[in-house]
Image (cartoon, rainbow, N blue to C red; front, side, top):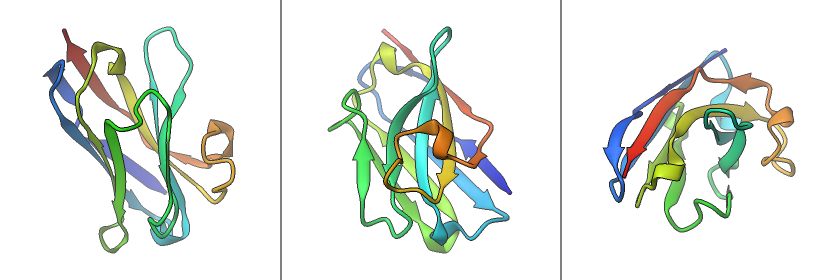
Length: 123
């Protein structure tokens, strides 16, 4: 199983950025997917989750109304559109896969993780 995250970079506050995560080696459409992030010195935290069909989404309060999670099952790809970025959004962003929608916010419920992509937002 491989989850390959990409799309990170250095942007200015207020800019937008879209992350992608391409999955291989697992039945992508059978898995709920999540984005997490980890800033230096902090724990990895939930950002957004989407159900296996794409019909349900969930967001952390800190990104609600700014970030949009989506997926294209035909392309085995997960996305995170990030708008109105703030310096506090600076972190390494990880995609992950889980069978458990009810506990989508809990990182311990995820069995597969990508390698992470760095997002840096300057003020």
